[in-house]
Length: 285
Image (cartoon, rainbow, N blue to C red; front, side):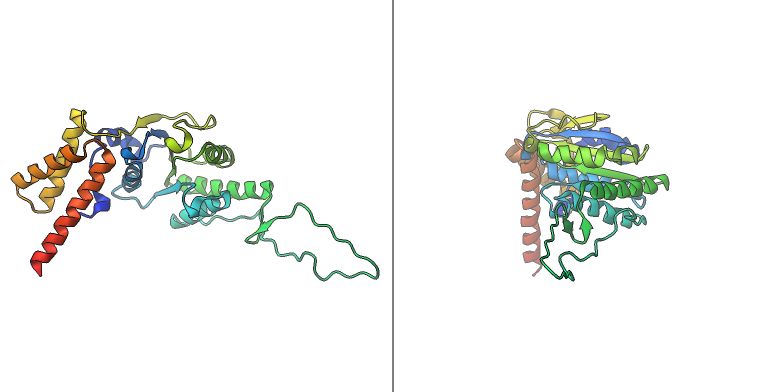
């Protein structure tokens, strides 16, 4: 039985030891720095979500805000994403102050003489008023939803991926200081990534972190990290049914060939298991 590539647990033992209290329910703010994709931030993000509230995550919800994702690209997308996520926890977000627009514009008008109609400042998208006031009310509604969820014993994690300075500014101003920071008490966890997309610096409005981590780009040269990765690879191969001597050779090969990059280790290990799986399948046919 070969492990699935998406669940490989390689490296970051020290980082996740420091994160453990937060992933088990403690609220707060965490800043995670990385300098390049060699640090495998997407994989780290995946494991972060996987570990939040594990093994019983029934009362744990997490939402990732990413300006590269169509589901959280605009402010309205982000509002809808919060509402959908809260619905998973049994909280239905109501927008009582923002009623869908259903009026008629420039229709059913008549006059005996000349008729001039001027419409300005009206923007309707998907039936909702897009004014700053109306959008602020919708954000307020999802923040109230988060407050209701955590007051009922739930835990909520918001992950803000590495985004441009402008996108960061928008999130901090409209969501975080618009009500989210006050919504979670001790059970709201905010994690924001700081990488190349934002110039490797958080926006000036980013909240100060309770914990700051920097993801390594390489494994080689760090004896503790190399040993952790070696042990992880040994465990993976042993679970796949390989003999101890084969396991040691595989672990040494992965580290020596790909130790210059955490991402390369992850990708190299995944490719190796895929090749071994294909070889095993051929042998069985």
